[in-house]
Length: 231
Image (cartoon, rainbow, N blue to C red; front, side):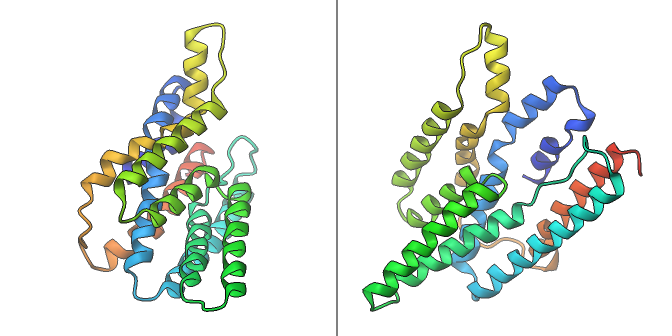
């Protein structure tokens, strides 16, 4: 997934046609990280700490992006990605939902449900990939023990996204080019990768725990600096 993620971010260095192919092939990446975040939320011993760590990384990423963009000062090369913010928003939504069943008061339950809906709505509007990744996280969490229902809901979501993005053009090439650009519906290609995950904990050390936290921002910042000929 890290390799695929890099392919999606090297558009500065490849022809547009190749970049379009990479864009389609990598639609599984963001949602796979979201899937693993839901698993992390399920297994972690401290959900508040998990949420705070993601939130802290989202803030760190935003500060780093602003510094890199200030150094480059080229409107054609702007780092805006921040999946940590998307993941933190999704985990905040799930945390609120997880508290619902622990409340005895109907008023508190209603408040938590409304709060989770608000977080979802704001996340869809303001976070990177939120329109796809946050509903994906919600489906994944609510249907964690119902894979068939989960898969059907993924498929319905993919069809809805396709219908929202499809525009017919005069030529097949133009239509395919449009679909390569508006390919969010291809998130459904994550399913084979989900089934490669056996639910068991893998390598457990500092490298495996923090690799993504550092690889994600550093590779984006390096790509931006290289494309601006600053490295």
